[in-house]
Image (cartoon, rainbow over the protein chains, first blue to last red):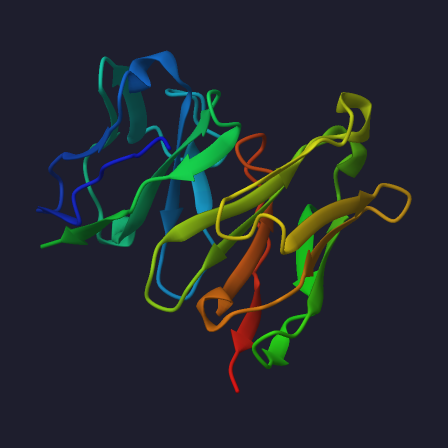
Length: 108
Length: 117
């Protein structure tokens, strides 16, 4: 089955840029979606189809996808960005959705 | 206002059954593929299964841990998604979400299922 790999944690200072990788075999050929989940809350979609932002999501959130790694980038990080972030793809070969294991972003 | 409201969770003994519902409003439910996702306490998101729209054949897809035990269905006349869970195991203890993600990315608030003797 298809596996998505994410680092357990990323730390970033306020105002700096956080990059959250999501690794998968030829993930660049798939569409990647990203969800933010704050403690005690339901997930929120922040990026879909690699680079698109839903309405209401700040422009500080952006995505890219190429080769074996997709990346969620959060620019000018704020304290309110502290959350778990999950990548998410549809695997055509198995007709399954797959979530990454999640990355906890800590704002120092 | 878009809403997805899950219900039907609770405490059930191992081997028991439970049916979850997800009531949708504020969007054209029949147009959307719908997905169930669960989250065990302190763990990450786990995809359970997806049902296509009726016009796409309402085909269902399931993750390996729940295949043959769980059944996803939908009633577009009631704008409601269902998850029938049979032969429940302690490992099925989790918060269960319904979602339209990635399309529009609507998520419910979840309903808690606890499987324990």
